[in-house]
Length: 385
Image 1 (cartoon, helix red, strand yellow):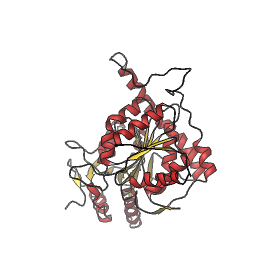
Image 2: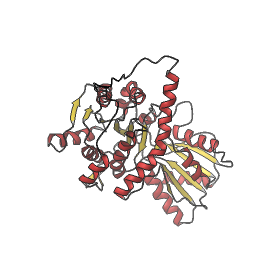
Image 3: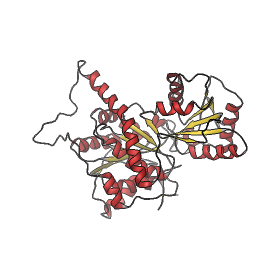
């Protein structure tokens, strides 16, 4: 099918058949819920859609539905995700396997409706699984991946499927759809064992936890996030058998024993980086790309193993961490340090804020820097006027 990233998310949601879908529109996420509501109106899916008064209410309704034992999905973007922040920690702390599609968009101010990762990186420590998508195909596939990972009884954590606003959400691409019966079998029946509506076994949700218990609860929550790394591999393998596509936590391109310089990034820009790397490799330049698919939990071991092969590393972030180093760079640098990978040189770059284009020449500049041993402590900016 020819689908935009937003339509691909809606198509996956239709096949997953969530019981409750609370919604509130925000650019560039709106096409996801518009398309899904169209499916509902045509009776192609029997989900209960709740039109809420804000994104805060959307997540509140999602939490209520999930706690009642109903499969719940939703979508948002930018300021909507920021408005949800109070409820994101409640969803993860209550161990509710909600799946939310997010079309990444810059946070105000100033007002900007275009892509960067300030919204999704701003909630990276809210306790949600985060899976980044490069294409509409990955958006579609990742919804199934996120669902089975979130609903695994050893995990029970909410998950975000992330796509770049406009660059993916509104770009029309060819998407291969899982046959309906096979999709239904893969998704399976939702069984949440802790429904607050269960009469025979009373459950408490969102209780007061004082210092004697709160710490332990959060440690258990973190254990579940760490467990998600192991479960991810199993779910990805199962989905690959169905789609014949691979879903490694990190995708390696042009990485071998001779690779001298690598760019690490996530999202739709990985396609541009791979195109440039392929052209440079044809000219004899030993360069590669590492695309981060699974950002939370962060695949530290897999990345550390991949980085053993190269000395010079560039990390491209589509957001700031004001007053510190950007978030993806921070993860890569800590991976290098914790893995005791000596002799590595790492350069931080920020690009694409507010939808600024990342051009092939910008990627070429990055490779020229790291292959030329041009490193500095300061973060550099790509395509800045």
